Image (cartoon, rainbow, N blue to C red; front, side):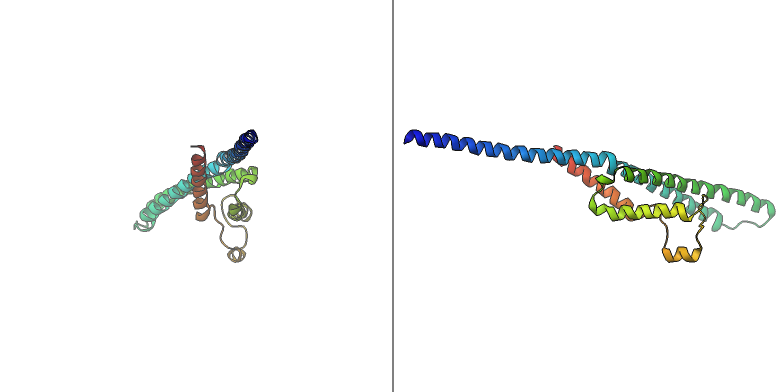
Length: 193
């Protein structure tokens, strides 16, 4: 009887160890899959999106600074109306506005890159981001369809007003991409350390 009890206790302990080892390996495999997926999301989707969104945010800031300086220098300041003064002012105004528009052109180029990233990596998009990313796509397509190369609206103004404004990059898109990138990075770091 003692030998039977001894055999059962040895085998029982082995079974428990085996079950525990199996549970640990399943958990470890799931953790590795999660780490691998997060790494791919960060490297191929949310990281590049964050990079171009942050660039565009800076471009908007530069555009705003130029427009603020333009307002102070050319709108709020009173100049004479003689022909030479007006000609000099017109040249400076045009140069200033052209430079401000160049920053918006860079932002539009970034939107092309953002579109490419989203199209290439759609399978990595979190479900709660789909609607926001579709709104980005809608605005991006509207921008290139409803405006000419100079940025002038081609669609009649009455129709445009009924459809709504076109955004280069909505603030909620910028905010969400930056938050998601940081969340993904923090989650990844917690899993690997």
